[in-house]
Length: 118
Picture 1: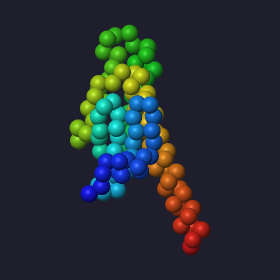
Picture 2: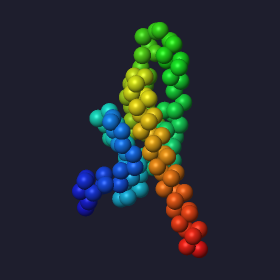
Picture 3: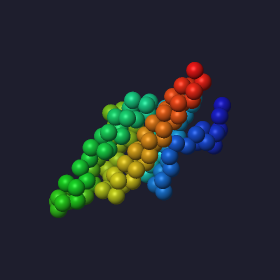
């Protein structure tokens, strides 16, 4: 069985507030953010990333009510369920968008390498 340090050597993206890595054993993306760890299959990760990106930050900023200070962000399988502030939502977006960029870049590089071999 692999050690945690071996699993996290596949880090996809890292920020001050968290990091993501690809777990080859479970074929999933692991997100470590806000002292919580959540695991997603790739399609679940993309749904979660779109959900976080759909939060309207501008509406939250201009809404002066107490309810707009934070928003509950959760996934369908309850892998992640937190009430996040505006800053935390922006930090989570950075982590998720960076992870998606890395996955897309890796996919494009694999396609180019396969095309040059063929």
